[in-house]
Length: 266
Image (cartoon, rainbow, N blue to C red):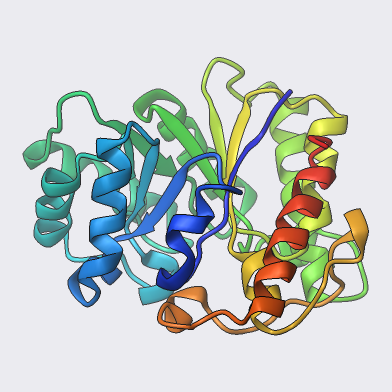
């Protein structure tokens, strides 16, 4: 199996990012403040590069304004966009999806639905809805639920193992939809992803994470295919104007190569 990767990057190296990304992953709220950022993704679409558009909920803590979001979808014409959701609230996420579909239809553009909730039951109910409604199902890296179900001595490890156990349980209980592609949103520790490859969860098609790039921006080098035992707390979106040094660019190249090695792609 092959998991496609996209590592969000600062504006200064967006063109270079095409050498280490399989597709482009855009944060909609940055379109409003950085014209160069939008222009890059518009050019990418013109060159037939796959583009996913995110509603920026991780950065904003709530989904980007729905009407403005629709305008940017219309302007960009991404291959896929994330329908507005509500952090850790499954019922509100389903309601938001239903409300969105009443007034927003974009022919030929796929929709990604994010599973949300705080408990197993809530997450499963939301998953079942997205399994029917969405073109691609997304599962996030940082549900608080994982802190009670994941194992490990620290928060990052529990996030990583928690998502693995959640997916494993969905499969065990015959809830996992093998007929729909899945996307993994973000990561705490990069080494998490090898488990999905080694266990042939073959319809996990893509992952987005700025982890190897943000690590390089903090002068951190991956430990081969183990990755890091820490995670810089800064958001890539807050460093979107960062100018990379030559040494940091070498680290980006190395870290992204090691990320692919974790996925057994090298």
